Image 1 (cartoon, rainbow, N blue to C red):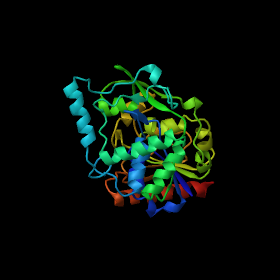
Image 2: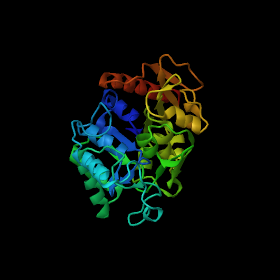
Image 3: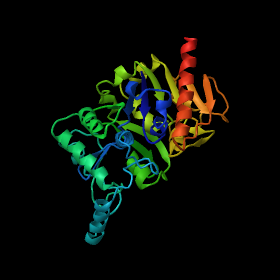
Image 4: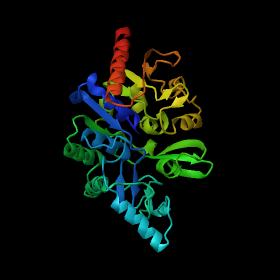
Length: 332
């Protein structure tokens, strides 16, 4: 049995080849929900959805989000209406008193649907409508995720990290903003000062998460701060990881992140934005899989070409992960 911690695009890319080393029937994936937002009244869970669409064979692998060949008529119509009505564009938070009204949410996760700042496809939107309706019926996020995973034919066990609200908030030189606002609307341009996981201290890991962490854990090449950090902020998670075998795949090639704002965010939390810096943000990791051109540091390492452009690359890295797990076990 093996459990992957997943967020963003890094770990899903690894999962494209994970079956080369790990049986899907014995694989659990815990997904980051710190990126979740409400947009126009719909509950959007981007990192969960990437795994749903990947498992269902419909993921857009050009973007690694959304559904392949989806249409965007509703999104375009919203922009047209806003323009004609003279309504503002860009991220617009609902008023503070509305942030926690009704369904319990962390502050600063609720956005107006006027001129949506995120591009949501029409089939993608159907998933958000279904999820939101299940939540409104009283289902938990875990229960809603399971129903959707069954609908998409997902063969791994997929768990959201928590049923409780956690919001990844980025404090920048332009003010505080939700991670989605920082990355999608502003393209990561503002200077990051610090990162906050609002609600994490009051949240609980979702049912099955801590039990899944009793198994060997793999952290894929996801952003350590905003893709994996929200999970580590949940009560009990870091302690559980300290007690089990953990292997992490570096999201860096030398000092360069594969994609996204990992480097800027690592620097903001006083961690060196490089493979070597992972040791400070992942003190519980027993072994790392790093690029063949990276220098070794004071943790057991397996080297391979860790760039993942297709499923064959992913399979190569997955086999390196299996080698790292075996190395740790052989030294226990």
